[in-house]
Image (cartoon, rainbow, N blue to C red; front, side, top):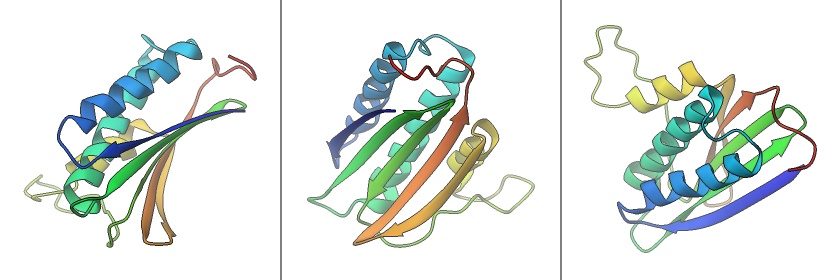
Length: 135
């Protein structure tokens, strides 16, 4: 299993920084430039954006954790905010929010939310045939 994590400040440039961090992780595993790698990058962007907008109080950070375990790549965003993220439930697309999680739901194999001390973890899993046991 390979694990990589990094904290990001509550600022707009943290979303592209999180995406760049994820890209480097994917490159080490031979997944950068693949369709599955693109799915992971988009989901990391959405999860980081949600943490930044909804989950990180001023003066706090969010943490991105990436893990390749067997044939599954895990992406987690830890934040200290409350609430439970949800996919928008208006079929006509008129929801003001939840569209990012709709993408995460469509592109990942599984996703969810779990509680942690002082906040939550929003995670997504991606099955892949290219995730070796060692980079």
